[in-house]
Amino acid sequence: MCACSPVGPTGDNGPVYVIAGAAENGWDVLRCTESGAVLDARTVPGLVAAVTGIERAEHPRWVFGGEEYASLLEAGVRVRRCHDLALVESILLSFEGRYGEPATLAAAYARLAGLPVPEEQARTRRPSAQPVLFETEPDPLPGGVSPARACAEVLADQLRRIEGSAWAPRLRMLVAAESAGALAAAEMQANGLPYRADVHAELLTGLFGPRPANGARPKVLADLATEVSEAFGGKPVNPEHPGSVQRAFARAGIDLPSTKAAVLREIEHPAVAPLLRYKELSRLYAAHGWFWLDEWVREGRFCPEFVVGGVVSGRWASRGGAALQLPKLLRTCVRADPGRRLVVADAAQLEPRVLAALSEDSRLAELATAGDMYESLAEDAFAGQRHDAKIAMLSAMYGGTAGHAAALLAVLRKRFPEAIGYVERAARHGEHGRSVRSVLGRTSPPPAALMGEAGLDSLRAARDWGRFTRNFVVQSSASDWALTVLATLRLDLLDELPDAELVFFVHDEIIVHCRARDAPRCAELVERAAEQARRLVFGRTKVRFPLPANVVDCYADAK
Image (cartoon, rainbow, N blue to C red; front, top):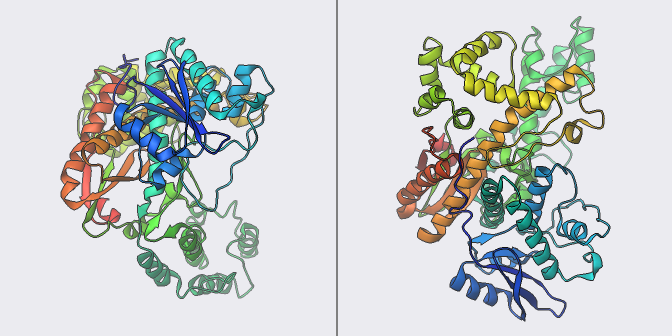
C-alpha cells in the first residue's frame, strides 16, 4: 500500500464554520478550531451576506445544518470547502464495522449523546428539485439541541475518530474528497447539463412516429407488436410480457428459458427480429421518452439529482432521470450554449491501472505507463492479442473463469504475481466474511448487508462474496482517484476559470461547460487534476492515469 499525502487541495487544514437556521429566523454561526471545538458563536440575520464575507476573508471549511447551500447557490454564492457530516458519518461507520447504521445528523448526535437513535427517513425528491448539501431533519433533534450545536458536536466527534485511526492520513483525504463531491454535486444540479429538448423530440419522432396519447403505444412499437403476433400466426402476443412471449414460442415448438436478448438471438424464428427491435426501442421509450423530456428538461438544462457515494464502492448514483445511464443515442442532445464549449474527459482503462498502483507490481506498473495499457499488456504476455489481454485483466478484477478466461488468468498470475495476489487476497477475505478497504479507507460492507441474514451460508455464496471483495478493492480505489480529480479540478476552476461550470460526473468521466476562449485552459486543468490526484492518492507510483480532455460542441462528438 502506498504512502498517501495527508493533506492537499481537497483536504488542507484551516478555519471551520458551522452555520444553521436559528429559531429567531436568523442563522447561528459557530467558529470552530480545526478539531471542531467551538471558539465563538453569533446569530446573523442574513445568510448570503454572512457566508460571502467569511468565505472571501478566510476560505474556511463549512458545515451546514440544513439546506443553506441551496439558498447560497440560488444567490450565486459558492464556497470552496465543506465537511459533509452525513457522508463522513457513513464512511466512518463502515470503517468501524457498523455498516448500515443511520448516518443522519440526528442519528450521529443521538449516538454521541447516548440518546435513542432515530430511524433514517426515506427521501423523496422535492418538487422544486433544488440542490441540497444536507437534508433538513424531519423531526427536532434529540434532546432539543440546536442544529448548529449538534453539527459542532458531531463534527468534533468525527474528527476525533479520524485522528484516532491508524488510517488517519488516508481518511482525511477521503472525507475531504467526499465532502468536496457534495459541493460539486449540488452545483452540477444547479447548473444543469446543457440539453436540447428540440433535438431529443426530433429523435423520438424519427424513432417512434408522432407522440402518442397518454397510455397508448407509439405507432412504431404498435406496428412491431403486430409483426410479432403475425409471426406467430396472428394470435395476440404481448412483447412486454415474458410469459406471453414464452408461451408463443412454446406453441411453435421452441422451449425458451428466458426472453433475454442474448437468448433470443440464438433462436431462428420470424418473430425474433421484430421482438428484439421492440425490446430495444421500448427500453428507450420507457426510460427517455416524451415523459422523461417533460419531467427532466427545463429551459435548456437537464438537472438530475446526483447522489454522492450512492454505491457501496463510492461511485455516485442519481435519483430520477437516469442521469448515469444516458444512452449514446441521446448524447447528441447535449450541446454547448452559443459561445461556450464542452470539455469532456474520460479516463482510459482506469481499473487495470488502479490495480497496478495498488499492488505495487513493478512489471504491471511499467506496462501501465503506456497510453493503451491493454495494448502493452498484449505485447508483453498475450502475443499481441489485445482482446485476450483485456479479458484476462477483467477476469482478474471480477473473478471470471468461464471459457478461455481461466487460461488467460493463469498467464497473468505467472507474469504478474503481486497484482493477481492482491485481488486474490481480497477475494479470500470476502470468502471468510471479512471486509476490505480502498486505498483511502472506504470499507466494504459485511455479507449480510447485501445478501440478507443468511450471509455466507454456502460455498457458492462465499465465492460470490469473494468476487465482490476482489473487485471492491479496485473499483473503490478507482472511485477514490476519480473523486479526488473532481475535487481538485473544482478548486482549480474556482481559482482560474470561475465562469466554467462542472455539469456532469460519472465514475471516470467529467464534463465542464465553459466559455469557448477558456476551453483550452480548462482542458489543461482537467489533465493537471488527474496528475495531482495520482500523486495524492497513489504516492510515487509510476503508473499513469490518462484523462484526455476533448473540446467539443456536442457530447456525442467526444466519443
